[in-house]
Image 1 (cartoon, one colour):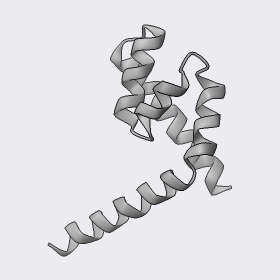
Image 2 (image 1 turned 90 degrees about the horizontal axis):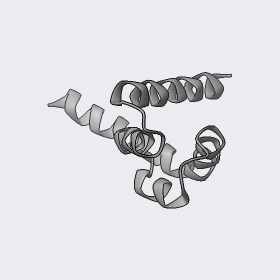
Image 3 (image 1 turned 120 degrees about the vertical axis):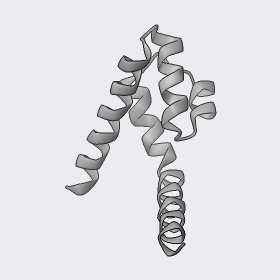
Length: 83
């Protein structure tokens, strides 16, 4: 039970960080995937699954390709914020 509470707290903190940096992240995603619209980003709101779906829809990529793009983008963010 205690681990579950810690996980929930960590998730809430990560969500707050993403919400606080959403404008900055949105700009980076627009630079990377210019085919996505502002409406697409409003739907996505930091959700990787929705982002993957929008990439499939806009670029015609299969699921694996879209998910790989999102993972690579997330990895680049982790690298950038560590430095």
